Amino acid sequence: MNKSILKGLDLSAALWAGLIAGTVFLVTMLLLSANVLGSSDLVYRMMAAILQDEGAMAPSTPVDGGLIGSALLVHYALAIAFGLVIAIVIHRWGLIVGLLGGAALGLALYTINFFSVSYFFPWFFPLRSWIWLLGHVLFGAAAGASYELLEIDNAEEGDAQ
Image (cartoon, rainbow, N blue to C red; front, side):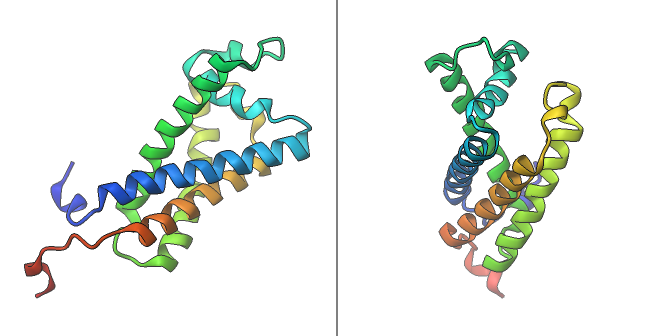
């Protein structure tokens, strides 16, 4: 990766932004799924199916510690990775751009996840909905805003000249 892209990036803030945004996403999805769909199982099943296989999507598969553990592992690994990408893009643009730019990048993640990644995980495509769209947009906004709020300016003194 080009070092100039990462120059001044606060990796700790990016990591925390991914974790915070991942938690915002997870809570949002669990609440919306429970209230709109009547069950939050789908959220765990979709995430676990990335690691396990599409068998995790079957209603007969129990939502147990193994399935939830797999789901959380996949979810937070992706949240940290996507949080880092968002931090790289919005780095040093300020809170408003972090929030709005992050939301736009969340929309891009939704599009990538449900219209490209679904090639590898075909059970995703029929499950696309406004709930998942909203979750991705909120994830991006939370990641961008969290990064900008947590960032410690690592610019070298010579950069200001």
